[in-house]
Length: 148
Image (tube, rainbow, N blue to C red; front, top):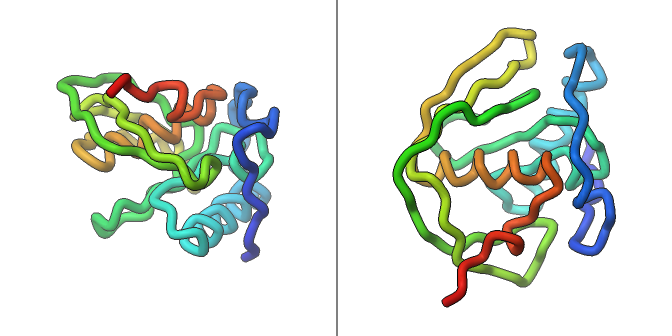
């Protein structure tokens, strides 16, 4: 496993839409492993592949709930409620902003074994999933900050 270089606000790759992963192969598994290591090394709770320069629909999340989520082609299929809180981002260091997100989301994704998985998330996990899926569509949290 290896650490990947982070991309920062202003890098055009962060504004591009990521491509679906067609096949879960060893390259994707290595990318996921590297992304987890990179996320931990930088004290993040989530990381999307574009943040390490790869335009693939792949994210990793660890909100300290006992699970490390390794999501391939994640999609939010249901959302409800609202939460407003400060967000930051490894690709936008030194900035924080108030962002409204759903309180609850249901997301489906493919795991490393090629299985479709559904997760019902609330609170911080729901926020992290929304934040990382935004990255896959070229959206940064600073695009969603609320007027204070």
